[in-house]
Length: 259
Picture (cartoon, helix red, strand yellow):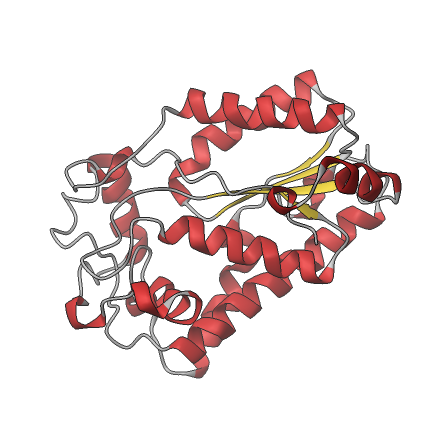
């Protein structure tokens, strides 16, 4: 067992003594994902990816933080969100306690793009306050983007359909991870224009200004099998980068690992 939430403290102490000194902290969100996906979509995805990595690498997995920075989804019911400074402080506080019981490497694995500013703040604080802690905060788009696009291209799914939020990509993944929570009868397209332009508009004015459905992409072609392949591709990309970090000295800066 590598999930902290399911371990006793002697089990954790023994794991650390045996050299398992890397922890993955998954970050999710509680925010709208269109009329067809649950509010906890990003948390489900973050946890699933962390669990896959733990199956292949000597790492411990912390409980996923289910609330992130999601104010770009203001105006949709169900939103829970933190200020960037608050989330950064939570990450730093957790990291400090982890270091206290022997953690030497921390991977902050975020499945929600809106956490970016908080992650930058947390990184600056941790590098200043805990320089002995090797820290990796991967950029999902940089680390995994090509892998996801290759899976989609093989099946003839264009980028505008995959989308950036609640589109075919996330919907396919949720169909694989928790199909009982996906309401495909309510799946409708949202913004399907140029994704770069759409992201710029979303960041500047919020999701509602871009699409009334809350969807950026088209979830209708979603498929559970492709969702599994998306997740496998992402896990493989993270694993390759993280394996490099695990092989390095714990105090070596992981900045060259696509952080």
